[in-house]
Structure formats: structure tokens, C-alpha cells
Image 1 (cartoon, rainbow, N blue to C red):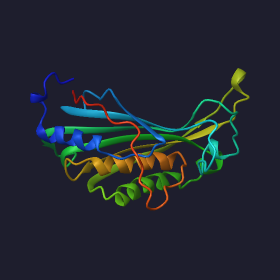
Image 2: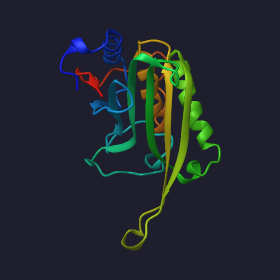
Image 3: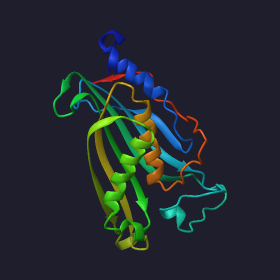
Amino acid sequence: MVNSLDQVPADFLFALGTLRHARCRSELRLAEIPAPSRLAPFAVALGAEVIVPGDASGPGPVHGPAAAGFEPAAGSEDIELATGRFILLHDPEGSAVWDGQFRVVTYIRAQLEPEMGNDQMLGSVAWTWLVEALENHQAPYRSAGGTATRVLSESFGTLSDRPDSIDVELRASWTPAGPDITTHLEAWSEMVCTFAGLPPLPEGVTPLPRRRPGQAPARA
């Protein structure tokens, strides 16, 4: 961690400020988490969960176990539909690999219905969600790359009564065109909600922030 703000580059401080201005959907629980220490001289990391109340009424997810007729008892605990991490890296010297001074590194995981999880095009669909989210939020970027993985979980022995489950994981990174990261975080948060199977917000509805990133910048 940085002991003095004097040690933090102005561009990174500016980027942190733009993160705090991001407007994310209310279903997304966003909080600062420990940043990786070896990827860049300066870094900040955010963890996210998409949570819906166990006794919620109204439109539910469009895919995933919570969309498959699951009816939690009234007063039951909240349901986690997806999780993710958003990491912003900064190297004042720049990086030839990044093609810039900043790099966004992300991870998203969500459980799917078996029918959707077995779709051979799932990886391409997951990547399309990312690209479309960045484009829809007008978040300029370059040098994007990523990997989509399907994870099959089977239970045996005393746990054999548990149904099989399929998760999708997307690990991706891209270089933002500048230090303003607001739209990049907003695009990513919308993508996490897409992975969770939440319907898109109606046109003209402005999402409100639920949790803000922490104040303290982190340094490797």
C-alpha cells in the first residue's frame, strides 16, 4: 500500500477518481479488494457479486439455476448469480505488451443451466458480451484478449444427490484509451449482470450506484 499520495502518479489518482464516479446497477455489490502486487507498480482491484433477494418478486434471471423454476422459501437468504473481479493496472513507464500505461484485467464466473452450458458456441457468446458491453458504453479500448472456459462440476459419494452444474468463466484484459475508466467499469458491471442472466435495463432507465470503490490506492 502507498503511504503517501505524493508517491502516486497523477494519472493513476485521476483514474481512481473516475472509478468512484461509475454508475452501476443496484443488483451489483461492488467493493475494493486487495490488489495483486506483482502485475504493475500501481494497481487497484474491485470485487463484484450479483445478488438477488431470495424472496424477490418480479422479473428474474433469463438463464442460470435461478431461472429454471427455483423457488426459494420466503425469507431465505439472497441468491448469488455471478461473481467477478475488475483490476486496473498502471505503469507510468508504459508497457509494450499493454500498448499503453493502463491495463484492465477482469474475471467473471456464473453458473448456467446445463442446456446453455453445453452450447459449443458459449465461449464466443461470452466474448461477444464483453465486446458489446464496451461498445454500448462507448468505452474506447485496444489490444483486447481473453479466454472463456466451461467448468463441469460433478458430485459423488455422500454428495451424489447434488445435481451436476456447469459454470462459465471469462478472463479478459484490454487497454483503455486513456485514464478515464468510468465507462470501462460501467461496461464490465453490465457484463457481470449479463452473465448472471439479468434482463437488460429498460431504455431510459438510469442505474444507481450501490457501493463505491474504496478511497485508498494500492501499490505493488
